[in-house]
Length: 118
Image 1: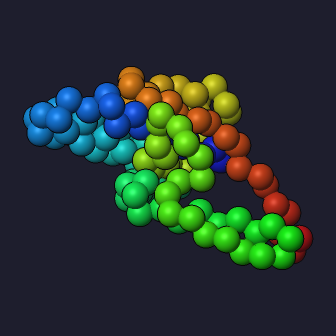
Image 2: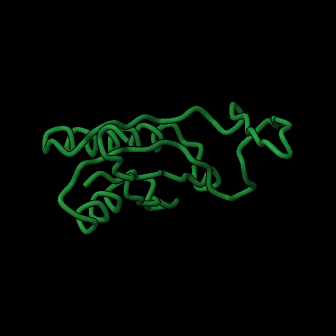
């Protein structure tokens, strides 16, 4: 079963110390290598900052765009992993290992399975 692990980071949790940032990157590299080695990683990427986001809404046939993320929140979507695991329990176990789970939130969602030819 495939799950998306959406990583929401809390920018206010960063100390600003470059050493802390380097440590976080080491933890991410270790986690990523672990799920590559286990064969559970499908894909994953970090995202650029929310200041680069553009939100699109269509209302009454008119498209409107606004700079920034779609919602005002404390946490920002910072990246994601798609994993292929046996069950939800394993997806939750992996989500808890993501470094930003310590200060932010990791949302776990199953991917819809669309039948071939649909």
